[in-house]
Length: 435
Image (cartoon, rainbow, N blue to C red):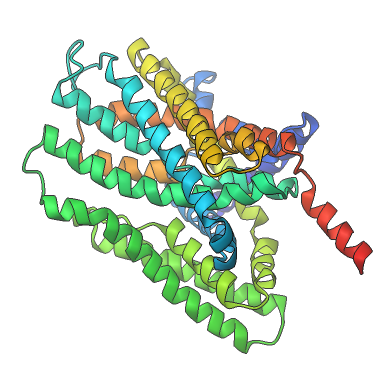
């Protein structure tokens, strides 16, 4: 226990230094957390043979609750964007962008991977129309849809960004995570049917993604409603708001994880992200002054974000780059196809929705990070399509390595070129002048 506490302190120190170094190079702090986090993990084994890392795999598993908490806090914050009044006026815009962005990412990845030979055990040689190749393409295409919201949200907060691009990013990210879970459910069921006929009930396979999505939203809705009721009964106190909000977030996360564990034999995977987004959405819509509640949580979470991203860097193993040339080509094609698909789809969607030109140009750059949702989906692949897992996990981990380290840089590029950095400061200064 003492050693683990000491390691948590080391992780915070390394992350803090990484953030400050990133600032020196005019990069987002998140990039510094991730890059210096590499020094704590197994990647250092490339330099020091046999070195497992300061943060071992066992430590990663023990500290996994920190990542769950950080993602839950982030999801709660994203829920603040789901104000129904705003969605009535702009909901069609968000939905249109998310629809096209997800469609093009899935389509580009599937088509791009279709004609590349795959190593055993999936297939031998070039067989583009084999069942194995189709199933492989479907699974990876489905995993390309979801966006990891954490890095983008932290970059927006760090630079106090505000404007049309910033206001569009988080609702679109939330929607494409919902789409990603549903699409994966359908595509994965079809892939199983192709390579492992009779592996499960078709009816349950079709119902499963809906159970996961709506179950998550139901849990978040109930707890969010209770949170709103309690906050209304309290006197205006940021400390009280903070305590009851954190209780609600942790309770939501704990219930979802307990349900997932209880129904693990059915591979039910309800989402802590969606559930906590719903908690935040209830607060955003049912409280007269929801900003006080969100701010109380934001004041508490910074150390968790530093730990989360530094641990994410420590979990990445650069030794994965030593895999065979075919696997490297597959990973490169996947990374490029996903990136081009998301950018192209977001641009077309924003054009169809008739958004401002800068939203069309830059929204796609903020939708590239890949992480938490994809890792959760990998667990399902490992248990239900184990022959695919080694290859797919290698490709996804390489993609996460690229997109989690470069994603914050692209997000900063988007809000910078859109002229939205320090947008919140400009609004506050204008309000002060008006007063």
